[in-house]
Image 1 (spheres, rainbow, N blue to C red):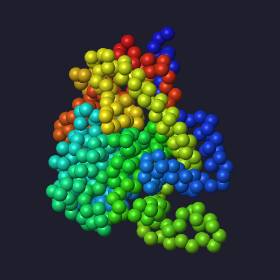
Image 2 (image 1 turned 30 degrees about the vertical axis):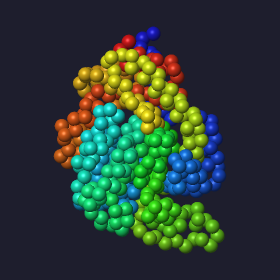
Image 3 (image 1 turned 90 degrees about the vertical axis):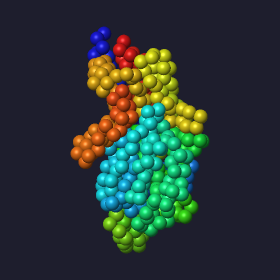
Image 4 (image 1 turned 120 degrees about the horizontal axis):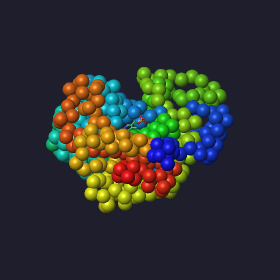
Length: 405
Ligand SMILES: *Cc1c(COP(=O)(O)O)cnc(C)c1O
């Protein structure tokens, strides 16, 4: 058989089966399709899974990140520290608020934001740090949490809003789009820092087609229950009552307290999420880890490859992306290898093109030469297929194709 006749191995199709379809059908037939009981149940179960009090579901991680930047009052003149190596959403939401994304270089070991570089980038204008758990591997949260609480760093902090005064320091808003279910020192992501946002986009580990969740884990001066209620209102036009509570008899009158946003999650999407979450820890994560282990067993035997870290004494990944690197190659050579893999009907990707290489950020004066580690990670990286229905035989085909066999 010619290689091109082999069946296609996609990169990351969602796991949709009869159970998912039955739950979505039940939601459709229930008479209530927008935000309702299923969303509330999904929020409750997510909070239990993460080990915190309150989770707010929204229609994307991007919306969740922006909602929290707006809540904290991030605005023109402010700076937000982000890794140069991430998806554009991390920085775009900062731009939406009128603030400046301050990019810092990452680690070559695990691709995550480098804490020393974060410290050097902090100024009087810094309001928020957005670490990204790249590929599902948690950042150094102890170091980050300690950094924002250091006396000299707190002294620099210049609060403008009531929320900023209450916190009294830089906020950590984790972009955990990749890392639902990952752990650091025995705790799940979502419980590791002030605020954590998950993505349930179609390619992510746990999907609702599109969707996101905000995990609230702020210091005790903030009332999480009140903040939860406030964010439900803020994500629904600032309207004092949601559609469901308005359906109760005599409950039609409402008020609008602020020009809020429109980014609530629907019950149809929560129906998918409830099925996904139920089988996430003991099924999805085990399957994904098995695939990671197979790739690592194969590629660690070959000198040409650099396998990713996804487990240490203190951290476990959510096994979202398998970012293989090839030693001593150029960006061009990497592209040629991808071309050869693709010719065998196997889909691979590159995570990510560093932000300074994208036109919008390049035109704003960011220069990839200032981020040598991010560039090196990118130039030698190939992300391999990882998804629930990927079989051992398919993994072997991917390994053979990457090895040039
Ligand atoms: C997918 C992704 C997002 C955005 O998630 P959405 O739910 O699509 O808004 C943000 N950050 C990173 C690192 C991502 O990979």
